[in-house]
Image (cartoon, rainbow over all chains, first blue to last red; front, top):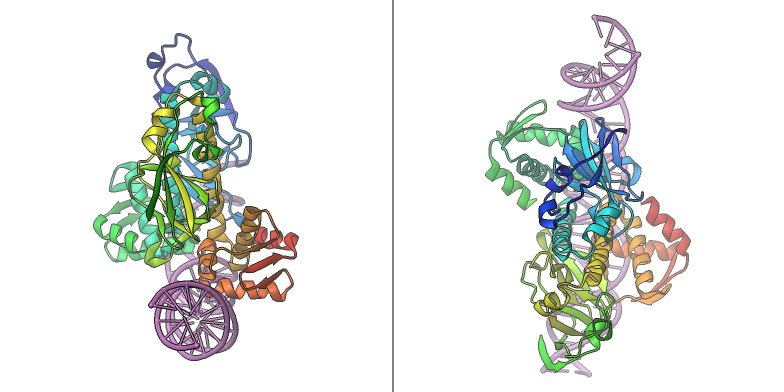
Length: 228
Length: 228
DNA sequence: TAAAAAAGTTGATCTATAACAATGTTGCAT
DNA sequence: ATGCAACATTGTTATAGATCAACTTTTTTA
């Protein structure tokens, strides 16, 4: 982790959906932010450590994951630019309950969580947004709980592919994650992740060349994902 | 579902941890509440339906569970008196993302969610409590995600037993759930739930007679739960 | 640009657990 | 009191997916 710069930055942390703009909040003073870069594979935040800053991904992709038993992690989701980390702790638990690691070189903008806290203390508009976001988080994780538990490998991989497609808003995309990570996202082994991908390719459901993936038959993928 | 009574009830919905007392809120008017009873096995609220009321369990136990594929549900947790249902929706998703069903005859007190919303709209103390509660919920579910995915049946059952022990605050307790439900709480089959219980009994880790369970060796149970 | 490390692939084997089956037990309703 | 439905138990079988192993390809680093 290299600290690039400690500058006043008005726009980037406020781009994030959940924050209000400086204008809306009617504040003059600029927020003091820290800009930090992370290299590929570097850990941005670590489960069970204290949340000192709200972090916004400005550039790059990152994975949010929880430590499993015996090095078998579970990836919860992929973070894209404008996604924030750590807001769960604003008025919630003081520690991270997940890890975040850079999938490629990442640039972040960080704001002291205490500043966020005081800034938004009495702002119920913000609190409502926060609560709303948490509601979505909870229902997402619950959905994941089901699928990781009850679907079989084809259903799990289908779901992951659809998730990625939606994330990148395209039926043709370049995987930022490795096969092993695709396995961690689907809670299956690396080998089976590869096998299912090959199956899908042979069945003309997807097209694949290295990291490039094209979802040929999204309708069928959805079916496979649903029935498990 | 039988509607018992529509009375003004000041104390019972406010007993719940997350609410403030009428005194703290400095309100004179009494809250209009609905008291409803549910018989054993009756569904109190249904996944994907609109949350119209915040429900507080006044008496009885209930299970919170999500619909799985093919009737294989997953029980998230057991609700005891003073636990609330539906608060996730106050400023979050408008629908339930889980089911709740009575494990034995239950008595509930319900308050229109809209009243809660307006009552607490500008009350950041409440919003902060809500945020805090959500934080705990999220980290609990994440923990569950790990254990259901990576532990094997002995670890899962050990975890469930420890959970129940903590819930009832006793090493000796009477199961309110069936073996099938213990399976659903541990995400394993009913048969394997029985088998593991018998194993634990034979290994003198627990004592068991029908629905009565006594955790003899909690330390070992914790070990089994941790290593999976 | 060579060497090392990381990532990807395919086949064979092993195993944990679900599913099936059969039967016993308890509790509730009429 | 009796019969039905829910609940519990134990043994057997089948299988999905992990693990192991050996190898190739790609990417990173020095």
